[in-house]
Length: 228
Length: 170
Image (cartoon, rainbow over all chains, first blue to last red):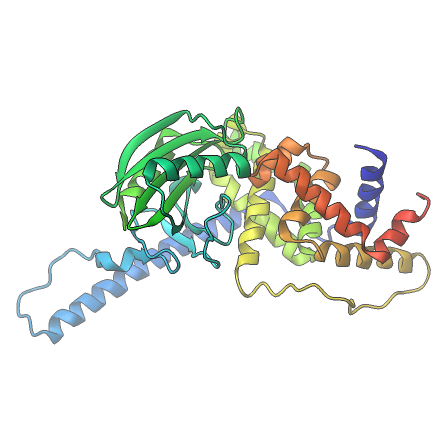
Protein backbone atom coordinates (compact mmCIF):
# COMPACT_ATOMS: atom_id res chain seq x y z
CA UNK A 1 0.00 0.00 0.00
CA UNK A 2 1.52 3.35 -0.99
CA UNK A 3 1.29 6.64 0.91
CA UNK A 4 -1.72 7.91 -0.98
CA UNK A 5 -3.60 4.62 -0.45
CA UNK A 6 -2.78 4.89 3.25
CA UNK A 7 -4.26 8.41 3.37
CA UNK A 8 -7.41 7.13 1.67
CA UNK A 9 -7.59 4.25 4.11
CA UNK A 10 -7.16 6.54 7.13
CA UNK A 11 -9.96 8.72 5.80
CA UNK A 12 -12.31 5.76 5.34
CA UNK A 13 -11.32 4.47 8.78
CA UNK A 14 -12.14 7.85 10.33
CA UNK A 15 -15.51 7.93 8.60
CA UNK A 16 -16.67 4.40 9.24
CA UNK A 17 -16.68 4.27 13.06
CA UNK A 18 -17.93 1.31 15.07
CA UNK A 19 -20.94 -0.84 14.12
CA UNK A 20 -23.77 -0.26 16.62
CA UNK A 21 -24.70 -3.96 16.82
CA UNK A 22 -22.93 -7.28 16.63
CA UNK A 23 -23.80 -9.94 14.07
CA UNK A 24 -23.78 -13.28 15.87
CA UNK A 25 -23.59 -16.81 14.47
CA UNK A 26 -26.75 -17.59 16.47
CA UNK A 27 -28.67 -14.87 14.65
CA UNK A 28 -27.41 -16.22 11.33
CA UNK A 29 -28.48 -19.77 12.28
CA UNK A 30 -31.92 -18.50 13.27
CA UNK A 31 -32.25 -16.77 9.91
CA UNK A 32 -31.15 -19.91 8.03
CA UNK A 33 -33.80 -21.94 9.90
CA UNK A 34 -36.44 -19.27 9.31
CA UNK A 35 -35.58 -19.16 5.60
CA UNK A 36 -35.88 -22.95 5.31
CA UNK A 37 -39.21 -22.87 7.17
CA UNK A 38 -40.54 -20.11 4.91
CA UNK A 39 -39.41 -22.06 1.81
CA UNK A 40 -41.05 -25.24 3.11
CA UNK A 41 -44.30 -23.47 4.04
CA UNK A 42 -44.36 -21.62 0.71
CA UNK A 43 -43.79 -24.90 -1.17
CA UNK A 44 -46.54 -26.69 0.77
CA UNK A 45 -48.94 -23.78 0.26
CA UNK A 46 -48.18 -23.68 -3.47
CA UNK A 47 -48.93 -27.40 -3.78
CA UNK A 48 -52.13 -26.99 -1.72
CA UNK A 49 -53.32 -24.03 -3.81
CA UNK A 50 -52.60 -25.83 -7.07
CA UNK A 51 -54.43 -28.91 -5.79
CA UNK A 52 -57.42 -26.79 -4.74
CA UNK A 53 -57.47 -25.02 -8.12
CA UNK A 54 -57.22 -28.32 -9.96
CA UNK A 55 -60.13 -29.71 -7.93
CA UNK A 56 -62.21 -26.60 -8.51
CA UNK A 57 -61.43 -26.73 -12.23
CA UNK A 58 -62.48 -30.34 -12.51
CA UNK A 59 -65.73 -29.64 -10.67
CA UNK A 60 -66.48 -26.70 -12.96
CA UNK A 61 -66.00 -28.89 -15.98
CA UNK A 62 -68.52 -31.29 -14.51
CA UNK A 63 -66.20 -34.25 -14.31
CA UNK A 64 -67.73 -37.05 -12.33
CA UNK A 65 -64.54 -39.07 -12.07
CA UNK A 66 -62.50 -38.64 -8.90
CA UNK A 67 -59.51 -36.33 -9.40
CA UNK A 68 -56.14 -37.83 -10.13
CA UNK A 69 -53.90 -37.96 -7.07
CA UNK A 70 -50.99 -36.16 -8.76
CA UNK A 71 -50.77 -32.45 -7.83
CA UNK A 72 -47.82 -31.38 -9.90
CA UNK A 73 -47.94 -27.76 -11.08
CA UNK A 74 -48.76 -27.24 -14.74
CA UNK A 75 -45.52 -27.24 -16.69
CA UNK A 76 -46.24 -23.84 -18.30
CA UNK A 77 -46.00 -22.25 -14.84
CA UNK A 78 -42.23 -22.75 -14.98
CA UNK A 79 -41.49 -21.44 -18.45
CA UNK A 80 -39.72 -18.08 -18.55
CA UNK A 81 -39.63 -16.01 -21.72
CA UNK A 82 -36.78 -13.54 -22.00
CA UNK A 83 -38.14 -10.02 -22.27
CA UNK A 84 -35.26 -8.74 -24.41
CA UNK A 85 -33.94 -11.84 -26.13
CA UNK A 86 -37.16 -13.82 -26.69
CA UNK A 87 -35.83 -17.30 -25.96
CA UNK A 88 -37.83 -19.41 -23.52
CA UNK A 89 -36.44 -21.40 -20.62
CA UNK A 90 -38.35 -24.30 -19.13
CA UNK A 91 -36.90 -24.23 -15.63
CA UNK A 92 -35.68 -27.55 -14.24
CA UNK A 93 -36.24 -28.34 -10.56
CA UNK A 94 -34.17 -26.16 -8.23
CA UNK A 95 -33.77 -23.31 -10.74
CA UNK A 96 -35.40 -19.88 -10.60
CA UNK A 97 -35.19 -16.61 -12.48
CA UNK A 98 -33.21 -14.09 -10.40
CA UNK A 99 -33.86 -11.20 -12.77
CA UNK A 100 -34.44 -10.30 -16.39
CA UNK A 101 -31.94 -8.04 -18.14
CA UNK A 102 -32.82 -4.40 -17.59
CA UNK A 103 -30.97 -3.28 -20.75
CA UNK A 104 -30.80 -4.90 -24.17
CA UNK A 105 -27.25 -5.99 -25.07
CA UNK A 106 -25.78 -4.00 -27.98
CA UNK A 107 -23.51 -6.83 -29.10
CA UNK A 108 -20.24 -5.38 -27.77
CA UNK A 109 -18.22 -6.53 -24.77
CA UNK A 110 -18.87 -9.59 -22.68
CA UNK A 111 -21.65 -9.11 -20.10
CA UNK A 112 -21.20 -10.99 -16.83
CA UNK A 113 -23.75 -12.54 -14.52
CA UNK A 114 -24.63 -9.30 -12.71
CA UNK A 115 -24.48 -6.93 -15.66
CA UNK A 116 -27.78 -5.26 -16.59
CA UNK A 117 -27.69 -6.81 -20.08
CA UNK A 118 -27.90 -10.38 -18.69
CA UNK A 119 -30.91 -12.47 -17.75
CA UNK A 120 -29.81 -14.16 -14.53
CA UNK A 121 -30.94 -17.57 -13.23
CA UNK A 122 -30.02 -19.23 -9.94
CA UNK A 123 -29.80 -22.98 -9.58
CA UNK A 124 -29.17 -25.61 -6.92
CA UNK A 125 -26.14 -25.09 -4.69
CA UNK A 126 -25.58 -21.50 -5.81
CA UNK A 127 -24.82 -22.30 -9.46
CA UNK A 128 -25.65 -19.40 -11.77
CA UNK A 129 -26.62 -19.18 -15.42
CA UNK A 130 -26.96 -16.01 -17.41
CA UNK A 131 -27.93 -15.22 -20.98
CA UNK A 132 -27.68 -12.42 -23.50
CA UNK A 133 -28.12 -12.14 -27.24
CA UNK A 134 -27.81 -9.74 -30.17
CA UNK A 135 -28.30 -9.81 -33.93
CA UNK A 136 -25.31 -11.11 -35.89
CA UNK A 137 -24.42 -11.82 -39.51
CA UNK A 138 -21.68 -14.24 -38.50
CA UNK A 139 -21.96 -18.02 -38.66
CA UNK A 140 -21.47 -20.12 -35.54
CA UNK A 141 -17.70 -20.56 -35.96
CA UNK A 142 -17.06 -16.86 -36.52
CA UNK A 143 -19.44 -15.81 -33.76
CA UNK A 144 -17.77 -18.24 -31.33
CA UNK A 145 -14.41 -16.57 -32.10
CA UNK A 146 -16.00 -13.16 -31.46
CA UNK A 147 -17.38 -14.32 -28.10
CA UNK A 148 -14.00 -15.81 -27.07
CA UNK A 149 -12.23 -12.58 -28.03
CA UNK A 150 -14.72 -10.52 -25.98
CA UNK A 151 -14.40 -12.85 -22.96
CA UNK A 152 -10.62 -12.59 -23.21
CA UNK A 153 -10.83 -8.83 -23.38
CA UNK A 154 -13.45 -8.35 -20.66
CA UNK A 155 -12.68 -11.13 -18.17
CA UNK A 156 -9.16 -12.30 -19.03
CA UNK A 157 -10.51 -15.67 -20.18
CA UNK A 158 -7.77 -17.46 -22.16
CA UNK A 159 -7.96 -17.64 -25.95
CA UNK A 160 -7.45 -21.40 -25.74
CA UNK A 161 -10.24 -23.15 -23.84
CA UNK A 162 -9.95 -26.14 -21.53
CA UNK A 163 -12.69 -27.81 -23.58
CA UNK A 164 -14.64 -26.85 -26.69
CA UNK A 165 -17.46 -29.20 -27.56
CA UNK A 166 -20.09 -29.25 -30.29
CA UNK A 167 -23.56 -29.53 -28.75
CA UNK A 168 -27.11 -28.45 -29.58
CA UNK A 169 -29.17 -25.87 -27.71
CA UNK A 170 -32.87 -25.61 -28.42
CA UNK A 171 -32.24 -27.77 -31.49
CA UNK A 172 -29.60 -25.38 -32.88
CA UNK A 173 -25.91 -26.32 -33.24
CA UNK A 174 -23.79 -24.69 -30.53
CA UNK A 175 -20.30 -24.66 -28.99
CA UNK A 176 -19.77 -25.34 -25.29
CA UNK A 177 -16.58 -23.63 -24.12
CA UNK A 178 -14.96 -24.06 -20.71
CA UNK A 179 -12.11 -21.97 -19.37
CA UNK A 180 -10.66 -20.54 -16.20
CA UNK A 181 -11.18 -16.80 -16.04
CA UNK A 182 -8.67 -15.37 -15.36
CA UNK A 183 -6.37 -18.18 -16.55
CA UNK A 184 -5.00 -20.25 -13.67
CA UNK A 185 -7.50 -18.84 -11.18
CA UNK A 186 -9.20 -22.22 -10.70
CA UNK A 187 -12.47 -20.44 -11.38
CA UNK A 188 -14.24 -22.31 -14.17
CA UNK A 189 -16.64 -20.49 -16.47
CA UNK A 190 -18.66 -22.27 -19.14
CA UNK A 191 -20.07 -20.43 -22.15
CA UNK A 192 -22.44 -21.83 -24.73
CA UNK A 193 -22.59 -19.98 -28.04
CA UNK A 194 -25.21 -20.49 -30.71
CA UNK A 195 -26.56 -18.58 -33.71
CA UNK A 196 -30.24 -18.91 -34.58
CA UNK A 197 -32.16 -16.94 -37.21
CA UNK A 198 -29.58 -14.15 -37.33
CA UNK A 199 -29.29 -13.82 -33.54
CA UNK A 200 -26.21 -14.83 -31.59
CA UNK A 201 -27.03 -16.22 -28.14
CA UNK A 202 -24.56 -16.67 -25.28
CA UNK A 203 -25.45 -18.74 -22.21
CA UNK A 204 -22.93 -18.67 -19.37
CA UNK A 205 -22.52 -20.49 -16.08
CA UNK A 206 -20.35 -20.33 -13.01
CA UNK A 207 -20.39 -21.28 -9.39
CA UNK A 208 -19.04 -18.84 -6.79
CA UNK A 209 -16.73 -21.43 -5.23
CA UNK A 210 -15.60 -23.16 -8.43
CA UNK A 211 -17.49 -25.55 -10.64
CA UNK A 212 -18.06 -29.13 -9.53
CA UNK A 213 -19.39 -31.99 -11.67
CA UNK A 214 -22.82 -31.51 -10.05
CA UNK A 215 -22.80 -27.80 -11.01
CA UNK A 216 -21.90 -28.65 -14.59
CA UNK A 217 -24.71 -31.21 -14.63
CA UNK A 218 -27.14 -28.61 -13.28
CA UNK A 219 -26.10 -26.18 -16.05
CA UNK A 220 -26.67 -28.86 -18.70
CA UNK A 221 -30.14 -29.51 -17.28
CA UNK A 222 -30.81 -25.77 -17.49
CA UNK A 223 -29.53 -25.72 -21.11
CA UNK A 224 -31.91 -28.56 -21.98
CA UNK A 225 -34.78 -26.25 -21.05
CA UNK A 226 -33.85 -23.60 -23.68
CA UNK A 227 -36.24 -23.04 -26.60
CA UNK A 228 -35.09 -20.67 -29.34
CA UNK B 1 -21.84 -28.03 18.62
CA UNK B 2 -20.07 -29.81 15.70
CA UNK B 3 -16.72 -28.66 14.31
CA UNK B 4 -18.28 -27.02 11.25
CA UNK B 5 -20.75 -24.99 13.33
CA UNK B 6 -18.00 -24.03 15.76
CA UNK B 7 -15.71 -22.97 12.91
CA UNK B 8 -18.47 -20.84 11.42
CA UNK B 9 -19.25 -19.26 14.81
CA UNK B 10 -15.56 -18.44 15.33
CA UNK B 11 -15.36 -16.87 11.89
CA UNK B 12 -18.45 -14.73 12.53
CA UNK B 13 -17.20 -13.61 15.92
CA UNK B 14 -13.75 -12.73 14.59
CA UNK B 15 -14.76 -11.03 11.35
CA UNK B 16 -18.24 -9.56 11.82
CA UNK B 17 -17.02 -6.07 12.75
CA UNK B 18 -14.72 -5.82 9.74
CA UNK B 19 -17.45 -7.16 7.45
CA UNK B 20 -19.96 -4.69 8.84
CA UNK B 21 -17.56 -1.78 8.29
CA UNK B 22 -17.04 -2.81 4.66
CA UNK B 23 -20.80 -3.16 4.30
CA UNK B 24 -21.31 0.32 5.72
CA UNK B 25 -18.88 1.78 3.20
CA UNK B 26 -20.88 0.08 0.44
CA UNK B 27 -24.37 0.93 1.70
CA UNK B 28 -23.88 4.04 3.85
CA UNK B 29 -26.37 2.78 6.46
CA UNK B 30 -25.62 0.66 9.54
CA UNK B 31 -28.99 -1.14 9.54
CA UNK B 32 -28.62 -2.10 5.88
CA UNK B 33 -24.97 -3.01 6.47
CA UNK B 34 -25.94 -5.38 9.29
CA UNK B 35 -28.63 -6.95 7.12
CA UNK B 36 -26.18 -7.29 4.24
CA UNK B 37 -23.59 -9.08 6.38
CA UNK B 38 -26.24 -11.40 7.84
CA UNK B 39 -27.60 -12.20 4.38
CA UNK B 40 -24.12 -12.97 3.03
CA UNK B 41 -23.46 -15.24 6.03
CA UNK B 42 -26.87 -16.94 5.65
CA UNK B 43 -25.95 -17.70 2.02
CA UNK B 44 -22.51 -18.97 2.98
CA UNK B 45 -23.46 -21.11 5.95
CA UNK B 46 -25.15 -24.05 4.11
CA UNK B 47 -21.91 -24.72 2.19
CA UNK B 48 -19.45 -23.64 4.86
CA UNK B 49 -17.49 -26.91 4.94
CA UNK B 50 -16.99 -26.79 1.17
CA UNK B 51 -15.97 -23.11 1.29
CA UNK B 52 -13.52 -23.78 4.09
CA UNK B 53 -11.95 -26.68 2.19
CA UNK B 54 -11.75 -25.08 -1.24
CA UNK B 55 -11.63 -21.33 -0.80
CA UNK B 56 -10.64 -18.51 1.50
CA UNK B 57 -13.84 -18.14 3.58
CA UNK B 58 -13.39 -14.41 4.02
CA UNK B 59 -13.04 -13.83 0.27
CA UNK B 60 -16.10 -16.03 -0.31
CA UNK B 61 -18.21 -14.10 2.23
CA UNK B 62 -17.08 -10.76 0.82
CA UNK B 63 -17.99 -12.01 -2.64
CA UNK B 64 -21.44 -13.05 -1.38
CA UNK B 65 -21.77 -9.65 0.28
CA UNK B 66 -20.86 -7.67 -2.86
CA UNK B 67 -23.10 -9.86 -5.06
CA UNK B 68 -26.00 -9.49 -2.62
CA UNK B 69 -25.50 -5.74 -2.52
CA UNK B 70 -25.41 -5.64 -6.33
CA UNK B 71 -28.63 -7.67 -6.54
CA UNK B 72 -30.33 -5.38 -4.00
CA UNK B 73 -29.30 -2.39 -6.10
CA UNK B 74 -30.89 -4.00 -9.17
CA UNK B 75 -34.25 -3.94 -7.42
CA UNK B 76 -36.25 -0.82 -8.00
CA UNK B 77 -37.00 -0.22 -4.35
CA UNK B 78 -33.34 0.47 -3.70
CA UNK B 79 -33.85 4.19 -3.66
CA UNK B 80 -30.31 5.41 -3.19
CA UNK B 81 -29.56 8.51 -5.22
CA UNK B 82 -26.53 10.78 -5.23
CA UNK B 83 -27.23 14.17 -3.70
CA UNK B 84 -25.45 17.49 -3.84
CA UNK B 85 -26.51 18.42 -0.33
CA UNK B 86 -26.60 16.06 2.62
CA UNK B 87 -29.58 16.55 4.93
CA UNK B 88 -27.49 16.73 8.05
CA UNK B 89 -25.94 19.44 10.19
CA UNK B 90 -22.59 19.64 11.89
CA UNK B 91 -22.31 19.49 15.66
CA UNK B 92 -19.70 21.40 17.72
CA UNK B 93 -16.22 20.30 18.78
CA UNK B 94 -14.53 17.03 17.76
CA UNK B 95 -17.85 15.45 16.98
CA UNK B 96 -18.25 18.06 14.28
CA UNK B 97 -15.00 16.97 12.59
CA UNK B 98 -16.02 13.33 12.88
CA UNK B 99 -19.43 14.02 11.38
CA UNK B 100 -17.94 16.22 8.67
CA UNK B 101 -15.54 13.42 7.65
CA UNK B 102 -18.34 10.87 7.68
CA UNK B 103 -20.61 13.06 5.57
CA UNK B 104 -17.85 13.95 3.11
CA UNK B 105 -16.80 10.31 2.68
CA UNK B 106 -20.38 9.06 2.36
CA UNK B 107 -21.23 11.72 -0.18
CA UNK B 108 -18.05 11.04 -2.18
CA UNK B 109 -18.62 7.28 -2.19
CA UNK B 110 -22.19 7.82 -3.41
CA UNK B 111 -20.83 9.68 -6.41
CA UNK B 112 -19.10 6.47 -7.55
CA UNK B 113 -20.75 3.72 -9.56
CA UNK B 114 -21.45 0.48 -7.69
CA UNK B 115 -18.46 -1.26 -9.23
CA UNK B 116 -16.13 1.68 -8.61
CA UNK B 117 -17.26 1.84 -4.99
CA UNK B 118 -16.79 -1.90 -4.47
CA UNK B 119 -13.31 -1.87 -6.04
CA UNK B 120 -12.24 1.19 -4.04
CA UNK B 121 -13.51 -0.15 -0.69
CA UNK B 122 -12.12 -3.66 -1.17
CA UNK B 123 -8.77 -2.44 -2.46
CA UNK B 124 -8.14 0.48 -0.10
CA UNK B 125 -10.12 -0.28 3.05
CA UNK B 126 -9.95 -4.08 3.09
CA UNK B 127 -6.43 -4.03 1.62
CA UNK B 128 -7.19 -6.86 -0.82
CA UNK B 129 -4.79 -7.38 -3.70
CA UNK B 130 -5.93 -6.59 -7.24
CA UNK B 131 -6.18 -10.33 -7.95
CA UNK B 132 -8.33 -10.85 -4.83
CA UNK B 133 -10.63 -7.97 -5.77
CA UNK B 134 -10.91 -9.44 -9.29
CA UNK B 135 -11.87 -12.79 -7.71
CA UNK B 136 -14.47 -11.16 -5.45
CA UNK B 137 -16.00 -9.15 -8.28
CA UNK B 138 -15.56 -11.84 -10.93
CA UNK B 139 -13.73 -9.59 -13.35
CA UNK B 140 -10.26 -9.28 -14.83
CA UNK B 141 -7.34 -7.76 -12.91
CA UNK B 142 -7.08 -5.16 -15.68
CA UNK B 143 -10.69 -4.18 -15.01
CA UNK B 144 -9.89 -3.74 -11.31
CA UNK B 145 -6.93 -1.49 -12.18
CA UNK B 146 -8.89 0.70 -14.58
CA UNK B 147 -11.95 0.88 -12.28
CA UNK B 148 -9.72 1.84 -9.35
CA UNK B 149 -8.06 4.58 -11.40
CA UNK B 150 -11.49 5.94 -12.43
CA UNK B 151 -12.71 5.84 -8.80
CA UNK B 152 -9.65 7.68 -7.48
CA UNK B 153 -9.88 10.29 -10.25
CA UNK B 154 -13.51 10.89 -9.39
CA UNK B 155 -12.86 11.12 -5.65
CA UNK B 156 -10.04 13.61 -6.25
CA UNK B 157 -12.58 15.89 -7.94
CA UNK B 158 -14.63 16.06 -4.72
CA UNK B 159 -13.68 19.39 -3.09
CA UNK B 160 -14.65 18.40 0.48
CA UNK B 161 -12.66 15.18 0.26
CA UNK B 162 -9.71 17.01 -1.26
CA UNK B 163 -9.76 19.36 1.74
CA UNK B 164 -9.61 16.42 4.13
CA UNK B 165 -6.85 14.70 2.14
CA UNK B 166 -4.76 17.87 2.14
CA UNK B 167 -4.76 18.03 5.94
CA UNK B 168 -1.77 16.73 7.82
CA UNK B 169 -2.44 13.26 9.23
CA UNK B 170 -3.43 13.47 12.93
